[in-house]
Image 1 (cartoon, rainbow, N blue to C red):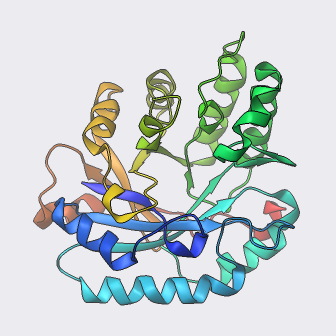
Image 2 (cartoon, one colour):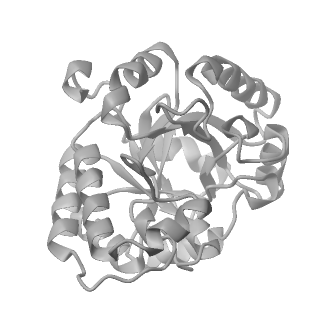
Length: 290
């Protein structure tokens, strides 16, 4: 099928060559893979991300692999942009400069709080989980109001370390899903959560069912940080998507979205699935992003 979330050593916390990731995708019979490496613009000197200056190097490497393996697998180029309202001017300049297949966004930081790194888990354990979740959802809502991106990565990442809250935050989640639908964003089904303490896909099955009820399209990603993780848990990911009632996943070419049928997807038929498209590259005045 597809894997739309693969990292590279440029982010300083992944390993293995990009070409090895492509070969892994081919060995699994995947139709498409998308490199979606981190672009995190923060005050830290190197915040586990490529720097803006490294983006051309990264995209040239993806293009080389795209050309080399043309006809065997579709190799796409994307960025996972970490939401930081103070860095939008830099981010938008990069997105306007380069030709990307997909732009994703995610919340890894709540100002000074790291919500994702294992090194930050102990600090989170000392925080009130309800307050932490509420702050995450508030930040996620603010991110979803913007239109510089196409895909929301691991939408409920805040659950990563398996902490439970006394509230289900259903009203807040309902508002976020309504906003996602209104904005036309795609939600990623990210299977990496099965390897995290929470032991659950992002989003949860309940949340994924809510996405389906709202008519929110989805794509599929492993969040691989090494070649052997490419396509990881794809069977579980596809089962979750099917159980939620979806019949298609979303792919992208030059920020134009198209449907890929989950159950009947021979490569010869793939182009026919691209007839009904959404162009994410023309989503409004960039000044509205800031």
